[in-house]
Image (cartoon, rainbow over all chains, first blue to last red; front, side, top):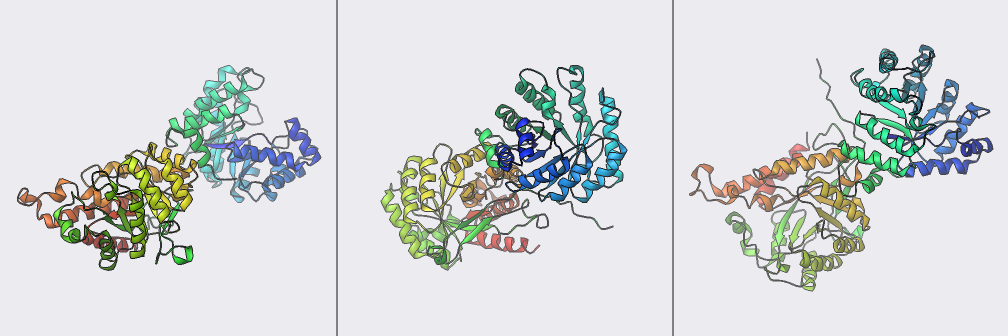
Length: 266
Length: 321
């Protein structure tokens, strides 16, 4: 399971303030806290309030790279901002993200190929959010087809079924879980799957419980990667336990502690 | 049409354990040996680096073995009462590059030697031979907890491999070896979950994972060899995928297991179809060893000099591939 830590995001007031004031220490601590908690990659998002998302992305990448060599997920809907992040990046990179729209694919797939980056593909297009499994599969198939045509390594493609909040789209969640399984049948070698976990509990009570319950169910469907809050200890313990139950990690009595030892040092 | 080999790319690697300290390293050994370090499944030389060959340690005891068969007694019987000469013979006559000494004389049924006596014996052994040493207890847990720390101190600075730590008896040994700079053997009963747990427990005692050699416990050919093979394979797959808690080299007690099976010991009169007993045991030890090399064994503890000679040749040929 590839865990991408979600906390370096300008959506959070503390991070937005740190970006605005170019406060390196806050960003670097946030990066290291997440790595220590088990994140193998870090999401980097300037947030909606950023006055200059292009230079902010560059500053964030440079700031984080000073303290860790973990993979960076350059998170922006603007290709220009992602390009700037790529220029500054020494660490490995995940491009987060392209939609199923042709103009986005045309711009981002070659970029991912050129930089040997992973690519997150959202099952969404300019017409809006899909409402059922078939629409999700159609959009995902479009992304897979384009990547195959362009010779992009499908094993580096992470398809996101677009996770909807439980209190908004309760009827869709079973479809979303099934999409995770069915996305992987779209090609051979199969694409990988990713979710932005915290979406499921937006606006709800008991967020941590909802997050970890869905996470476990998604892992049972074959989920490969999640963008989540690694500082949520109960969530991380549920992830580790699921890895053992799915036989991805060898059981031992200290299996929770063992996970920390498996992780490479900072 | 040319066929490309399907090669796995692994993210993990097996740790490298050095046994023996030369003068340059602060010890008195003429050479040291390195085991482990693989970045590939066993013997897939094109898949990833395999920097160190499988090594063999000659097994000697400090008390006369009572259950060794005639084929071994013929070779070593005259040294049973003089383990120092036994050790020297292995090194000088049979060109042993590593010795594994079992401190059987400490066992309550085999002489009940004290920790002080065993420590003295180790000191004499280190003076008599200059090869790296593997030191094994007598198998009685409470006695081993006394003699092994004493021998660890006696061999301080020589970087030996000492064991065995088991799940219910690892603390005293791990603490002593950690203080004296040795490597440890972590023994689990053909059980990957316990092997992993024991490695974690030992590293929690302050002895790093890189100082651990796993004894997965093996069976000889026909006696559960395939179970050992699966455990070793499972550990290797996990280790190469990045699980550092099982990324230790393996030590396999081939001689001990091979020479106790009926096929190795029974005489030809009783089983005429099985062929000469003068050859059968040697063949059994050779076949068990080759299978374990395929499973990923890094250090083999063996007994018969002819079996060891054949296996050394086998390893040389394997590494020419």
